[in-house]
Every structure is written in C-alpha cells, then in structure tokens.
Image (tube, rainbow, N blue to C red; front, side, top):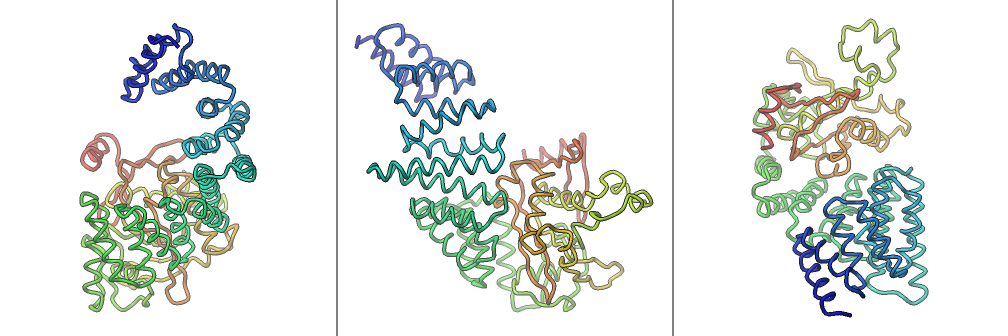
Length: 483
C-alpha cells in the first residue's frame, strides 16, 4: 500500500476521533484517490457523513464498504440503522440478520438504536420476533463453539431489549423473565439489575426490588438515581433508617438535584417526627388537616400525605374514569366546559393535567380514590374498586396499565413515557379495605406540554390548584423554572 494512502487514512482517522468530521472527510477522500486505500476507508467516510447528517452520502459509502468486503458486519449495522430511520424496515431487517451472523459481538453497540427504529414503525409482534430471531442466531454461534464474553453481552442486550418491549406492553412477568436472563448473561451490568428492580417495585415485590437495587449499586456505587430508588424500596419494606441513608447518599452524589434534596429533607422530617402527631405533607399546605380521621396505612410517608390534605404538593381525585360511561345526553346537559370539549375522555384529561402541573412545578403526589369534602368535613376514602368494572383487566395492575397507556402515553410527551420510572412512580396502598392509586411525581428537567386534540397546553401548580398558563406568562415561567 502506498505510504501516502496510509498516511491520509491515518490522518482521517485521527480527525474522526477528534470529531473534526469535515477534515476527516477530506482525508478519507484523499486516501481513496490513491490505490489501494486501507480497507476501512469507505466505512469511516460513511461514519463521518453520518455524523454530519448526510445520510444519503453515508448510505453510498457503507454500500461500497460492503461491496469491497462482503464480511463487513459493522457497515451492515450502520446501514441498517440509517434505513430504519428512513422507515425502510424491509430493507433493514435482512442486513441486521446478516450483521448478527457476521459480527454478533457488535450487537450491544446498536441495540438501543435498533429497538427505537423498529418500535417507531413496527407492531409489537414484529419487534418481538426480530429480537427472538437474533437470539436464536447468537445461540447457534455459541453451539458452534464461538462462545465468549462478546456473545454473552450480545445475548444480554437482546434479553434487555425484549424486557423493555414487554414492560411497555404491560407484560410484567415477561419483562421480569427477560431481565433475569440478561443478568445471567451479564451479571456485572448495573443497568439490568436496576431495570429488574424497577419492575419488582412496580409489582410490589419489595424485598426483591431492594436486593436488585443493591446489586446495581455494587457495580456502580455512585449512581444517585439508584440510591434514591433503593431508598423508596426500603421505605416500602419499613427499613426507615436504611432508606434515610440512601436518600442522604443520593444528595451527597448529586447535591444540585432539587428533587433528591426535597425527598431527603421531607423524609428526614418525617423520620425524626415519626412518633409525633401527623403533620401536613408539604410546607405549602393551606388545607386544614383532618388529624385522626383517616385510618393508618402501612407506608408512613403516604399516611402523612393523607393526613395533610390537599396542597401545592398533594392533589386528591375521586376517580380517573368517571366520564367514561356518560351518555351523549349527560354530556350535552352538563354545564362543564371540559365535558363539552373532551367528552368521555374528560376525567383522563383532568388526571393528565394534574400530572403535568406537578412535573412543571416542583413535583408532588396525586392520590386517586379520595373524595375531598368541603366546609371542614373529613375527606372520604372512596377507593378505586368501583372503577374496576370499567377496565379491561379489573385489578390494580389493570388500573396501572390504564394510567400508563391511556393517560401518560396518550397525553404526555414521549420522554415522560419512555423514562417513566425517572419521573412517575405508581403504587396502590390500602387504607382499611379500600385501595388507592398513588402517583409520586418528580420535577421535570424541561417544560412538559400536554397534547390534547392536537393542542399543546401547559399547566403548573399554584397553591392547591392546577392552572394553565400561556403566552408571555409561559415564556417567563419556563425561563425562571428551567432556564
């Protein structure tokens, strides 16, 4: 190989690694004018074009790389990812299967991109079938004697992807199984332990959640988010001292995180005063607490929320589905503007507004199943059992899926849905013989707009109310809150 071709390629590679893609493109093209050019020149020229957003040029270079080297699995992965982004699934799938057979060890690098591309255009069954087929191809490699750490990581990433799609579908048992398999293949990856712990937490398998969060931290001890989650799980198992320590650790690692600081501060107050008379759940509460009226529940933090009443940080709703079965006559005769505008979806839109208001302010707690009584009368624990007949799956898990799929996924931005465990935790505490739905909602990092009937709406919490703001007030608020 001529020395000038080799030096041009080496210079291009150095520019590429420094993310100086214009210079890299010049050098790779220069190398291609001198024959023979190094084998990976077309590949890295395609990567450089892709970094510049020149996808059509990148496609040409990856195709040329594959033509020159039919065993190039890496270029096939990149080409397939581009085609998925263009919704050309039928062209991408054969390339992906070939890539897995040629270079299965590279799959983890592309797993997230592949999953996002497939989920954008393909039904659940097709996405599931793709990852199962990839798993079969890698197992065939292992059977043929190609086992190694790279193949184990690839198997783990595929199980993790299957776990994600099952979780989003509400198939908790299937998701648990996949993450357990991922951990078997890659036991030192903290993310798989965390994901499995999140599912255990949702399913109220609290001891198992604690164990998996602890396993995640054993491999990545400086993850503040997992310390916070472990604290939450420890609260549910009534290990309050350990929970307090985990919240404190989260704040130590990320002292600038207002949400972690608030949780730690509130829990510290609750923990120190746990044997005293119950106090309002937030300092901003302007609602007279009904001390001694509500029955004790297992979670002390939740008991404080019930005792404190509605506030800037606490909202009660009696139902999430009260409008679902209204007749056209009921809607027409109502004085409610919301009912005339949103019809049978009104109750779900109202829940979405409240969630968005908390996300856009400082977080808070939404409790469904409590009927707030005015004029100083005690609030009534109605529970959510009366709504079960309106669900496809009449149980708490069915109620959770309704909240996630028919409210959060439908009205809130995809960022909130796809990272729901980061922003929203759903629990079903018991008060006497009644089940409540408790949504613990964190503060979002940027403004969250509801999309309702093709209209984007912005809500915040002011005192104990959720209010819409727009125009200059919205701009000023977002600059102060998220700027």
